[in-house]
Amino acid sequence: MNTSPVKPSLETIASLCKRRGFIFQSSEIYGGINGFWDYGPLGAQLKRNIRDSWWRNIVQSRENVVGLDASIIMHPRVWEASGHVGGFADPMVDCRACKKRYRADQLCEEQSKQLIKTATGFQLPDGIVCTACKSKDLTEPRAFNLMFKTFVGPVEDGSSVAYLRPETAQGIFVQFDNVLSVSRQKVPFGIAQIGKAFRNEINPRNYTFRSREFEQMELEFFVKPGTDAEWHTYWVDQRMKWYQSIGLPAESLKPYVYPKEELAHYASACVDILYDFPFGMQELEGIAARGDFDLRRHQEFSGKSMEYFDQETNEKYIPHVVEPSAGVDRIALALICNAYHEEWIPNGKTGGDVLPAEPGKPVPEGYEARTVMRFHPSIAPIKAAIFPLLKNKPELVQKARGIYQSLNRWWPCFWDHTGAIGRRYRRQDEIGTPYGITVDFQTLEDDTVTLRDRDTMQQERVPVSKLIERLHDALLPPLEETSTNG
RNA sequence: GCGGGUGUUGCUUAGUGGUAAAGCUCCAGCCUUCCAAGCUGGUCACACGGGUUCGAUUCCCGUCACCCGCUCCA
Image (cartoon, rainbow, N blue to C red):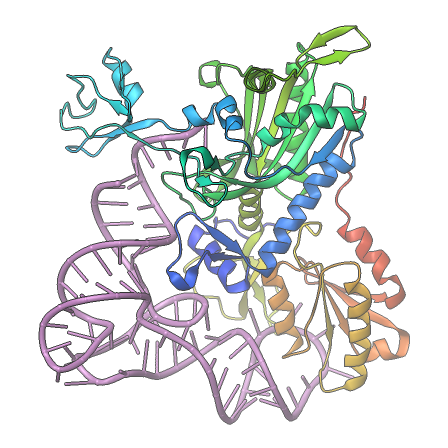
């Protein structure tokens, strides 16, 4: 049932997220801080569910993938080896006349000149002009270092400089040998990690989509050289299936296959998985075949061997890697956007069908508005809400309370006894709780409750003794395909 | 970073050079035998910092944040 023909605006989404406690602005009482966001009670639970689903799919259900939790701050040489210290600091030039901005090296290259490197930074050679307006009034090249810099220890000098990791992947590469030696894995196998990463984005935008602090879920899957392409295809397929398993419809997702000229020099293939956000098709995840670039670089920079000995073929090689790298916050935002629906439902007297709400138009006579978040039950923050039909009847309240406490042991549940029952259902609709359980007078006679479905608003009577089983089945994540073990 | 817009309570809005109103939400109570009903009461706001002024939420300047477009996107 799709009842929102028109995509909600980002503002509508942000308003609901704040109102219901999914997402707040960071440091809001101080005016906020650009590029940082906090997750409220429901957002924290939603993110937890995303991480759990990913971990279950990538690590728990696969014999040949193991987990890791590396530190955020690593030895600064890690970022020299990874290329982030150099590559993350592209000097930029602004045109004072027409306000265009360029990468200094690209601007020089266009005009067949060479960017001059100085002791302190960069300098434009003579004769460089703005491509757009031909003005010579350009700013000096300014380095935008996109890594957050900090100092380890109390003394802030050059020898104590360190960086907040701009990606979690390097922690995996750096521990490759340790993990290999303790996990009894053989190529092909993977190491997975979830954690925070930090990038000093020039221009954070689109709500939480491009933030300066964000959370990644990354898998480095190590394969025998020459098998990169087939494993890359495999992981693209696996990842597309996972997105659908958490409730993103196939038609809202699109793989973007990088053409050769857009690939990094060491990569043999890269596919982004895009989601149809209110602000356009944007990436949730990138799946790259990176060859042996990372392990080889760390071998060079550390002087430690990253070679793997393949006992079956008696070969020694540095494994190649396929890297599915996903953003938790982007997935959370996609799930929220996808879940949001407004509809007009007939009130009791009128009857008739549920209508999709038309933005900006008044609710028609005989109908009332409903906002409902249609999260997939397996990722909904709250799984069930338990209500006594009336709060001034102690026997109902007591019975319902007992049911709440028994279900609460298994899932995040919500207790609500205030106001009319309809109001309580609607409240839960707006936070996407898939099930409402109501204790009424019949419950006291036959020990059944009503189980109300969020999407259809239909109710059925279920024996209290069957509730856990019913919810268990309904909330189970879809069966996921995990055939990496061959 | 550039240009445009916005900023009054949780949300949507009103309003004023003399410190602010309403609806919804929320909370408490009453009532209520299944979909935002009703009654009574209650909490909560002029983004931040300067300036002008006897007095600024209102006028001026600056800052911050968010939205849109451009730019950027390792």
